[in-house]
Image (cartoon, rainbow over all chains, first blue to last red; front, side, top):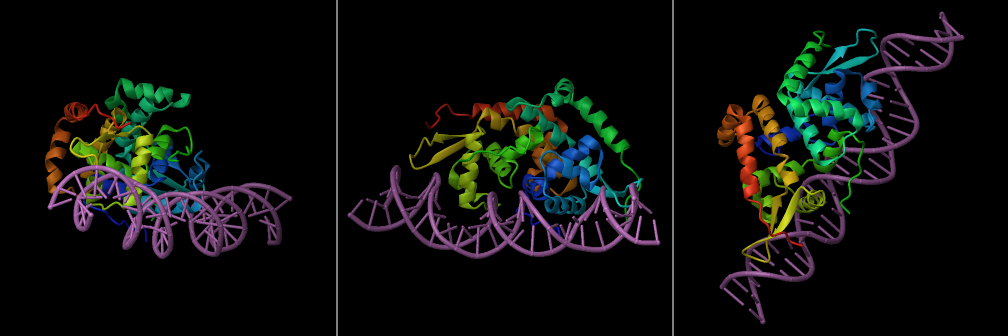
Length: 143
Length: 143
DNA sequence: TATATTTGCTTGCATTTTGCAAGTGCAATA
DNA sequence: TATTGCACTTGCAAAATGCAAGCAAATATA
């Protein structure tokens, strides 16, 4: 269903085949910032992803082991999405994109704090934030 | 012509609006590996980009200051493409993608050397390779 | 208990992007 | 002068994206 057609064995190419579309990394971004998101949370993001695209991207990311679904602790009607280890490991890429964007475009002021921290000690930030993400992973996967 | 519609002010989103399509980073990859490429060189890459897509992507990357065109020293019929500083600064992102891919998929053996070097001392590699890329930049931009 | 609302999707269709094949014009070579 | 090489462009089919509406299960409300 959500199978990938690999264009080549190049690691860059293979990676892009999984998450190199217009939307996947924005979903990952939301999960990195919020740790856990419901379907509705993703729809609320300012880029306004279409609901059908969101559904297919979530499937793709799940079938490629980047995110998992969890039962929402408060309601059976809700679903929680969160990053797997494989998804958490996209953080270094996200950080570098952030730094590149900081160098070449204007960053919204609410990101200044994180950018400053990143520039000061990237490795420390990476380590502590990775730890935080792992800590927030729940054990309760939806079967 | 090749203008970008920004989906939001988020730095991740803005960056993806420029090079977050299926092909742009593969063009950048070719330039990082080969320093300089002709139009035909890009077409020869194993992923087999369509010629019209290549043309529009090259325009997009050029109008966003990531690549420049140069006169080919040997022939007026040929055009050389190379990375600008802004393009060279995508190297850290490329490196992280490489490392992610190494962790989660099988890498072709001809990339083993570079991966090993990367894992040993990422910062050193980044520094020396950036230097190499800058050294290879030619001064002769096509007007 | 009946009804309305929320939530996570799916479906249908228009628009945009991508993919493929062929063609064009200038430069270099024979 | 004719032929080939190179950097594209053009036309059309296929796929991905975008938009609006719909739908079933779960929850909240009357």
